[in-house]
Length: 242
Image (cartoon, rainbow, N blue to C red; front, side, top):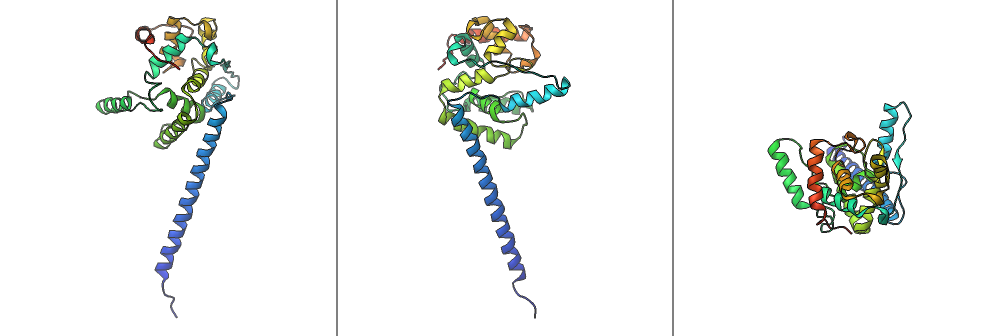
């Protein structure tokens, strides 16, 4: 006797399989976000010993130098970083840092319009919070999934951390040269002084090289950097910092 409901049974089995797979994916996604959130809560009070970007740079440097790789890094608290550097970085990277909640929507719209006009990516609009999220947790891979994760981490950081703590973390994990991380290591590497001793012009130069820090060695100046330094220096006085 021929069994009835064969096609219907198959549909039910496929639907159950889809639901189980979807439920598993959702559960995994939630666990990943909780993992990120746990680290954010911890790093609100304690300093990270390393970041995802530092580890990636170490791997790259080891390959290039046959295993002989070392990062220059020394953590310093917020109060021991020159106010000039704080103002310069905010002026250069995120003028609305104190006003937004992680995302500068106006800058994003302008960047999208500029990229659409050029037909390729020529402008970005990442805030300091977004850059910190990427440096702490993510790889350099470019994809919509990674951008979505960056947005989720940025939102969580803005809910948990103060602007002062976000800027303190950023200044201590940003790359300022080949294997040079953080304001203290950058000041000593490029100028032979501490982060607290940086003057306005030195701070403006460090802020100017942030987009491509490995291109410039020990205070080097190009026409482009000279123009950037002048622009940043003009904006520094009005830059608002926590």
